[in-house]
Length: 348
Image (cartoon, rainbow, N blue to C red; front, side, top):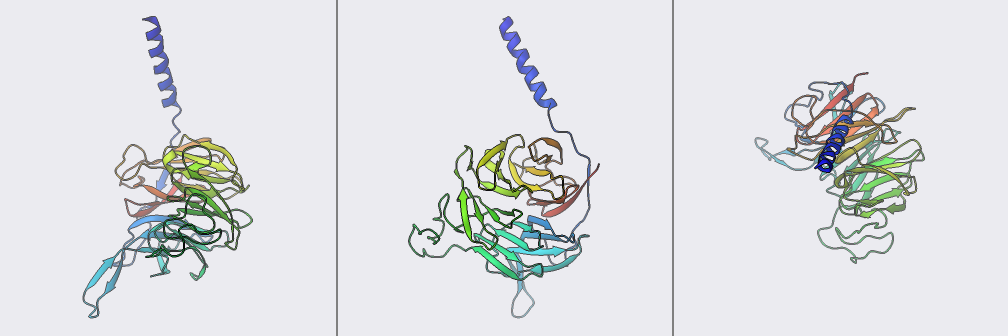
């Protein structure tokens, strides 16, 4: 009986210690009614959000587009991805790439150090690079064909049929990619997340260099690599969503470590500046009210604090799908289920 009591006491102490290690809450504010959309234009699912050096806000959305009939008196709406730009105060500027072939099902938008705009489209299996003026500069990947083109097993550097690119497939045979990032040399890293379970590395001109990863739960394996970021030293961070962790690799793809204390990692972001911070969103999807927080971390995985939880009110998150954190104390969050972008200001 004494042993049973001691065992129960130890379990209670362990649970108490776990509860006491919860990350401290970070005080923060959210700007109400941030984005001002034109009349008759709606945001939809804000899958991606990013800012450039001027502070302008870019949102890649799963938004239907409206078309008029010949008489102009009736309209209809169909699905599609759309890319919008706003001023730093949320005033609407323009739409970029309207009706573009590669726009199908939005996943993320990122801005590189030269202010080029990159969108990752999960539906078309493409990554598209725009100039700051909105002109297409480069495309990576291609849409699935309506019929199989070529042999099922494509040679190195070639392309097989739709959906046939396996783990570690060469080149830009993407299968529902999720995110893009760059190192200081301009090398491009793509999280090829749903179908291929890998990270692919390209040079600054889009030439394939290497890839790593396979489906699984071990080191260098992924169960939906849903986001990617690169720090100033060139280390690569991967949001391994269904394995509930962040994996860290060196620039050549060698496994370094993993962080398993931040829940189901939906997206990650690394801030700029001399002291970089890692942000990570924990979300179990639509309707889950038990989490939804965003963690602020050191690059070594130390959790400094957390803010927010799931919900529909201001300062709550409805599936935080992408985070922009160029300014470490000013975070933009794109939400799927709340159809909005929030500008979060962290208090000192």
